[in-house]
Length: 72
Image (tube, rainbow, N blue to C red; front, side):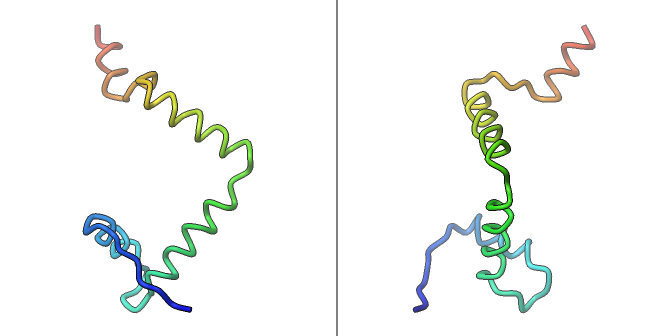
């Protein structure tokens, strides 16, 4: 059974940029993304979640911030 999903214009633009050729379907792009995500090991998934938490807590320093600190 086929269905329609709604996505923002921003996401649509990103999906369009990911197309390898004009006739590639959005379904193929989404399946590729899902397969990539599923290939991550449990440890990698855990590390990604931890990094996201640290970023949200402001514990991650940007490259620009590091450059500024080193110039002092």
